[in-house]
Length: 74
Ligand SMILES: [Zn+2]
Ligand SMILES: [Zn+2]
Image (cartoon, rainbow, N blue to C red; front, side, top):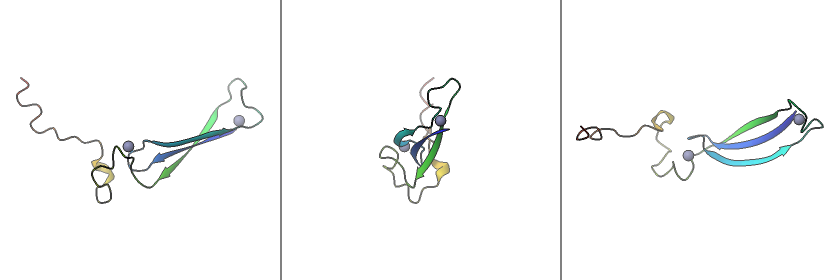
């Protein structure tokens, strides 16, 4: 089984770095799959770390302030 190490930001799961595939003898055969090994790095990417992620909990990610957004739409 081949392995490919993929590093992701732990806070937002964005891609940090994709390593090369560590090939085995069966690389390229039909039905052969490359096992991804996800390694998390302990912070958020530049896009998601603009507001300090140190104190923010993980559950807060992806939640946009929608107050006032729907008003005035209709
Ligand atoms: Zn393999
Ligand atoms: Zn991110």
